[in-house]
Length: 322
Image 1 (cartoon, helix red, strand yellow):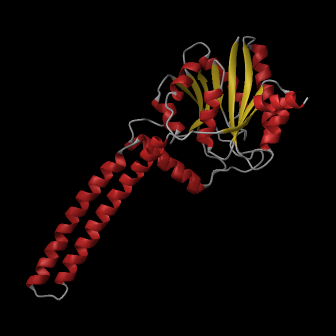
Image 2 (image 1 turned 90 degrees about the vertical axis):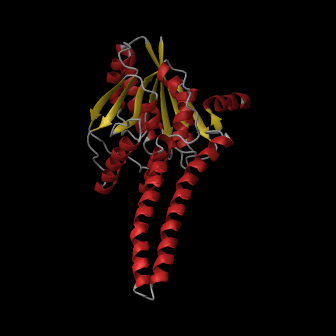
Image 3 (image 1 turned 30 degrees about the vertical axis):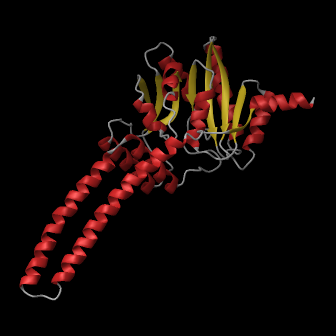
């Protein structure tokens, strides 16, 4: 028998969870009929939800022994949720997907067909459209991928999703990268392996609202740039050279002003020096500070997540009460 672990990070997904469970069980039940060698477990991660997400997990665990869950003590972010799922998945294959049905469970049979024979280590989806997104958000997303692939040695496919069907070998390789500041899109690409990309049209959520704001995505993109590129450090050197070049005509102007006995000669020289050198120093310190901040967080060795409750502890507590 081959066990498939379906990892589902969740944050305030009470509206869509029942629909997701119905859909994923319908698809997986069909897969077990077609492939008798398969069995499934569903590992839900509650990332500090403030709604009834955890209660729904408990209800699902009561009626379906395949359901497992981990509930964080607070909100740690989706990256921590995915790491916790991969870390605790028991399967020979591991699927990572969202509960909002924008990662269609109907793709799972085709994904399994790609990886079962060993031709590919991972099957994943790649959006060919951004239906439902604003034009501004779509433009910035495409810009991020262009910049990232220009400044990083790790290629990140535009539109590639976290929705992945992976072999145990690839999952173990990902888990070896236990860094605190995680950018999974980069990690998936960095570990390599043979990946099959499946194009699909973007679908909108059937219920609920996304927790990803524009500002949240912007900060996430910065995480990716800082995690997989040192180009900003090179940029600071380039900017320093540029500032030095710009300072030359300013000083020449100050010399001409002094020869012509303009009253502004001293002011031009001092002000130009202060602004140019000050900007160069502040920018360099700022970029170095960002990298130092990343190093600081890594050195602390903080846990990537903390589990407040699991399906095992929940079931044990029910048994103890009896």
